[in-house]
Length: 417
Ligand code: PMT
Image (cartoon, rainbow, N blue to C red):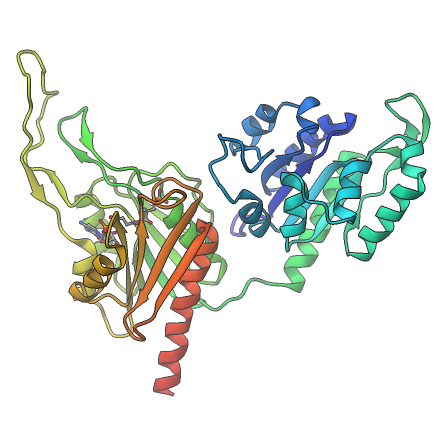
């Protein structure tokens, strides 16, 4: 896969069979092929392989149960299933095949199967008698009729020392067949190219404002929302330049990244990179104030009970970009609020003459800083529209925002035609 391409996103489902350990090898091979993999397991699978193993290898939360308190995403089965290019089950036990075939959704993986709109591939592994049993064969028939792809098990000596069909196919063959589906799907269903020609400048992350060489003032922005927008726009044909403050989220490939850690550095980087851009998106959490004086040396606390900091305003990058916007340029801002969200966002849109504002209540569960999901309202100046977006993954929200940008372009093209 060449580095310009967006990596395939694979949901790797592991069900509770002795071959579960082979899912680790499948994961490594998929990653070596450039795929981005997130793992989901049945409760039984965790008895064969610890979720920690997969977490360490993917640096992502391993989904076993939507309601696990450690789960960062309350509707993970929806978001997981809606943001993958393939759901691959290795190994697939007779039990999980039965659940899939009969629409049973009593755990995370079986719910994800029903919610997935990506292709599904299963690699069965089980005792030969279980494989041959009419009930299993009926389920297999049903799943094949539902369009599920099978990596047929092979004959050989099984873990239970019996010989016959039921042994998991070699991991290399499983991965080869999975990549075949992914590549075929990409050719058959190329991503829409509706942002081709757009040159986007986007600010991302949380700025850091120095107090002294050791300390700074910052905020909780991880960059996830901004990078989701950057990745989605790039996938839809836009050329994307991101000016990034402090971020902890994965950085997508295929975009130009300029690091600018403070509000001042970000202000300078935006000014230097704004020319010839057709869209500006202010997704960064930029400090409104910074210490008026930065101490040259670390402030010593001896003898101090209180420390007062005098803060001064920073440049309002978004307002400045909007005031200088060239003909046809779209300027889009975010509003991070905790109350009267839409009213504050609307006044921000008017005051700064923005074309669109994405307003998010950062106090809502599942929304705002460093979450996998967001809840927002899009306000559009040209139509007066207010579009409420319920809890969804930031990647899905990015596509919704970009859909509205594409709609603005379409309607302005129609009026000038
Ligand atoms: O990064 P994540 O962890 O995914 O979190 C996402 C997010 C909550 C940071 C994001 O969804 C968001 O709301 N970003 C804007 C945060 C913010 O600073 O909002 P604000 O209402 O304070 O600022 C309004 C707008 O002006 C924003 O577009 C901001 O980028 C811009 N701004 C603010 C101050 C400043 N000096 N210059 C600016 O450009």
